[in-house]
Image 1 (tube, rainbow, N blue to C red):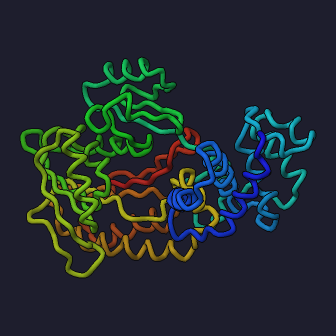
Image 2 (image 1 turned 135 degrees about the vertical axis):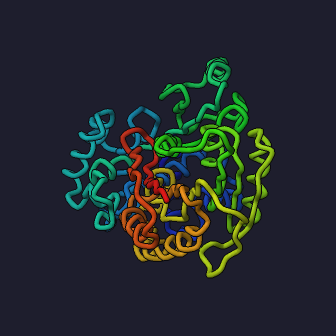
Image 3 (image 1 turned 90 degrees about the vertical axis):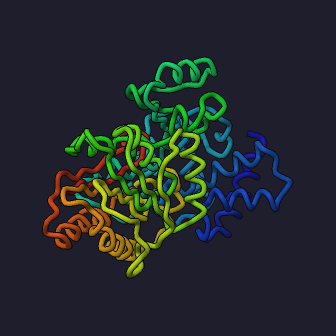
Length: 392
């Protein structure tokens, strides 16, 4: 690669100046907008270096940025893509080996490099998470997952094959695609498929534990609706329902309305409210199912935002936990007498998961835990989530 050393210098400058106040993707976009000298290939290679740097988390953090970039490139690349010009023969001889062998080589070359330091907050992890396997997964970019909507499987498969897009069939409702693939030109997003992580799709495993009255429409409140992926999932699983969605951000709900329109969902109620505050604005009525996918650390998704491995402050976990408790305390009264509460996060921290489960059970003695589970994705190039279903 002709400009590999210049790319390395540019990446170092970006990493030196980046403070995490905005997502790395947004920061890179802003940086390149302000520095017009970089062409599309330059931007791609510099961004790759930056993301690779953050993928090794805090492992060997005392080493210079350029050295950590080289370590990261060596670990995340396994094809001849031009970066070899930055390495000597000893590294190149190990370039195409299995990741485990490459990690062993790095730990020999740099004894301060510890796998456990890739994800450094192991003291906060749930006991259900396999520490080393989870840490190593951050070296691999996650896939993009499509959830095939009801009745659309044959058409979607044909469209993807026609577009010559590589994919792996996970199930009759789930396809995995490389992260770099542009899918929206091949299929109709939201109408035919929903871009939704594999673990998020597995929320249906909790839906299946519910006993519902098939003779009437389910009363659903998605109280932290965000982009609405789980609401659409519930609609596809349960069929016609009376849907209420809420979020703290009016702009999010505006975008959600457009997404529902594309998905063919015409009838729903929408409410802007901050459920973390005392006496928040609440929707009218009671609900058979309240879904609460709370704001959280997102630690189960840091394979997609690896800058968080380095820049996330442990003290934020407690802040998120307090926020989650406040939301839970405000919504429990909206359950029907036999209603269900589905609590979920994309976190791997017990403070946001098991400890909140215990808080829910202690806050309402009439609630019983139906099932809790970690939806583990780190062996499948997917996110890791936690979900717990309660019944009134």
